[in-house]
Image (cartoon, rainbow, N blue to C red; front, side, top):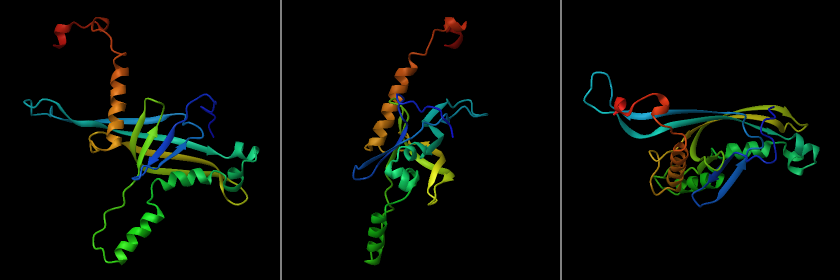
Length: 216
């Protein structure tokens, strides 16, 4: 298990789930991932070979995917005799991750009751909005594509006490969300923040040895 980013003064990454009733559940990472793998694929049209008349245009925000390896370890809880660690190891954290990907039993039972009552068309179950939190400048609505879970050690009751979770997710942008959705607004905050931070990185053409006339 990695010992990276375990200091007490470092912000913790997290998943935050918000359901349709506005109920918020936060699962902070016990240890921040040592690295994040991100990919961005632009959505553009134009510029294709053989069609010189069409300018390159944006279709929408780039498709961004994030992969992160998250670790949970019950050792400190067991050493300090914390009741949840003694009873469940890290199974409660693992359960919290898994439950984000499933409708609640209450919702399933409600839909079954409607079907049994003769309701012919039932709307698909609404998933919660999930945010991936990685510092104050990156709070991103995401769709979790997959968890790969490796349970590495167990207690006497076979509760996992060391777990590695590889999480794959796709960022939901303004191209994917309705403008009335809070997640849409949050993505816009994220992009506006990026634009502001990016402005501090730009230099002059002269420092690159290029004249303005060469590119305009």
